[in-house]
Image (cartoon, rainbow, N blue to C red; front, side, top):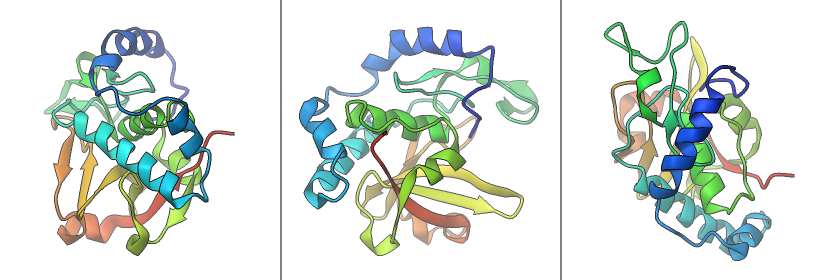
Length: 202
């Protein structure tokens, strides 16, 4: 969940995103109709249609590597390492991996599915505050699931895929994956901090 203003990596990320982003998701309904649907938060049909597009974009990323700091509105991108993140067994994988971290995945899926009408920050906390709360009983595909621990508030975000499943980028060394029965997994059930539905960009 890196801050969006970190310097020194954006040039590389933009170039790789331009080269790779277009090929990582199918050409879904992302024209003016999608943007109009995203702009009507009170239209339940519009929300549901957009949410299904978000979930479809997310499903198309399954198997893409996790990269700390990776992912932007163009798609998967080169990650990086900071003092604590991006490493596996002491080796910096972030700076040599093109992929997504958790907030980079949700950013891309919502931007792509909404034809740019919803642009989230590349930071889990900002995504939480840029979204409207949703009761667990009212979840629709595409909604964001947030997770928190006492030592790491709002440390993770995933996308609700429906049927009890979440699509997410978990940590360095893993791939974007679909997790079935997310609320039946003790770790995720215990850390669940709420669901949110992103709002159209002002």
